[in-house]
Length: 121
Image 1 (cartoon, one colour):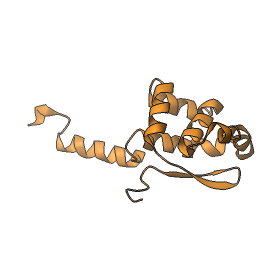
Image 2 (cartoon, rainbow, N blue to C red):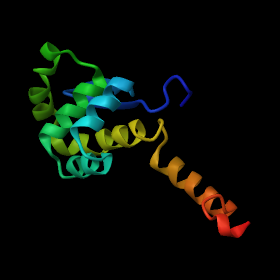
Image 3 (cartoon, rainbow, N blue to C red):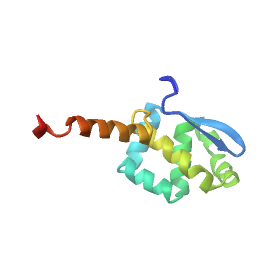
């Protein structure tokens, strides 16, 4: 994944491949609707339909008219098929496009170098 597509997640929605794209708008809307992105991730993991629809709308950059089709598209696709990729998108959106593995590796590297523990100097 290059820098131009970092954080993008391709999903199949109602039989069509579409790409959830990170944007400041998506970040702003989702961060203002949910107290934390952890709360949003928990809702997604539980299959919360309104949360999935909101993420899809923001990630696809849909207008009001376009977003009206989302419930039917979600119903046709199935909630369980979207939980993992939509959650991956949200994680990447709130972590500068990085995957969970990339974030964990960076945290492990920081912990190993003592960057987070000033008493190791």
